Figure 1 (tube, helix red, strand yellow):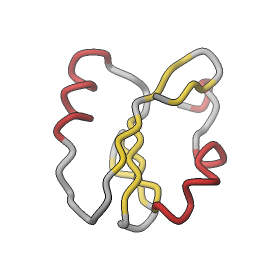
Figure 2 (cartoon, rainbow, N blue to C red):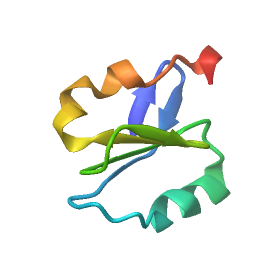
Figure 3 (cartoon, rainbow, N blue to C red):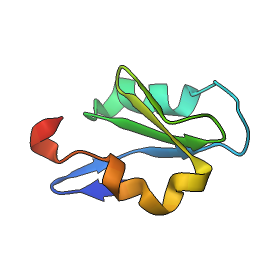
Figure 4 (cartoon, rainbow, N blue to C red):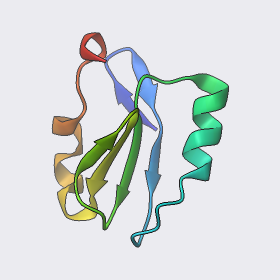
Length: 71
């Protein structure tokens, strides 16, 4: 979980390039967060509510998360 202003966003960490995101989708169905975060070896991209951040950019994670008002 990543705290962003007044909300908490789920973060899933993958070691490889797997496209599976079952735990994120289960969390989304139950809690409906504005954004789902995933870090993996895949490139930086956003698919609907899922933001994938490459592992080599993990130190910049907070710069990729918009403020609550922008979500």
